[in-house]
Structures are given as structure tokens and as C-alpha cells.
Length: 158
Image (cartoon, rainbow, N blue to C red; front, side):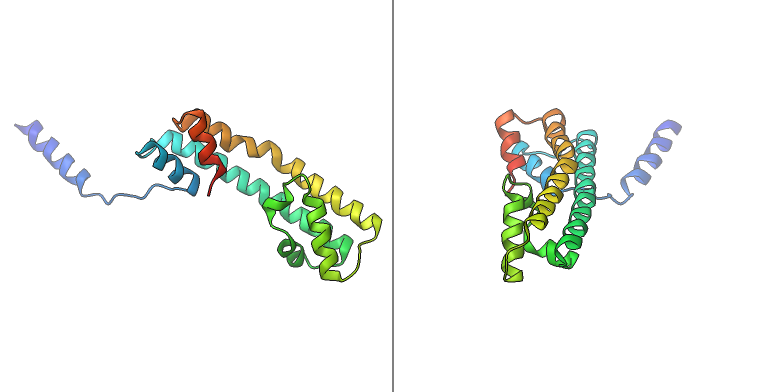
């Protein structure tokens, strides 16, 4: 009887604790939507950690890139950030897109040395980010519980 009373007290106290909301992200929500259920805490934390690391490394590389291009072109770092989206910079022709946008804003072509410097900065940005782009894909594959085709759909995003 005493055990039941103790157990009853513990379970009542436990049930009254407020539920804490688990951290989430768009990627985690897309995975959970595909699965039709919530991810367990460990897979969720692994996917969130990979996403966070990618975001941090991308921001660091992007800031360095904007500073480098701003020094070459005379634009502000904010102007560089606004010129071309971060996603466009990762494309094969990201440097060309940025050069064209900068030239449009300047109203004149960039010098060839400046074009090369912009291309070098875009390339360095890509190299700094690419190793970390694989981690969310690996985490989704390992911990997401999705078939390969589902994982690819989820990673493509919106």
C-alpha cells in the first residue's frame, strides 16, 4: 500500500510538469510530415545539430565572402549580400550572377582583375561550405527513417 501511495505521488507530480516544446526546424517538420509521426529525441537532435553546423559554417563563409568582394568592388558588405541570394552563389555560375548584378548596380563592367577576385571569393565560399552540406543529408539518411526517394524530396525543400 505504501508503494502505491509513493508511486501515486511521483506519477501525479510528474504528470503536472509542464511539457517543454522540443526544438524543431523546417527540415525536421518535413521529415515528420513524411513519416506521419514525430522523430525520437536522438534522431531529432542529430538532424538539428547537422543543420545548425551547416547554418553556422554557411554564415561564417558568407560573411567572409561579402567582406572580400566588398573590398574588391567598393560596395558595402550589405550591398553584396543583397546583390545575389546565397543559394544562387552555390550554383555553378554563381560568380557570373554576382558579377552581372554588381555591374548592373555600378552601371559599368568590372575590371578583369576584379572579376577574377569575385570569382575567387565565390569559389572559396563554396569550398568552405560544401563539406558541411553533406551532413544534413547524411543525418536524414541515417536518422530520418525515410526511404531514399523520400529523403531526397525532403532535402529539396519547398
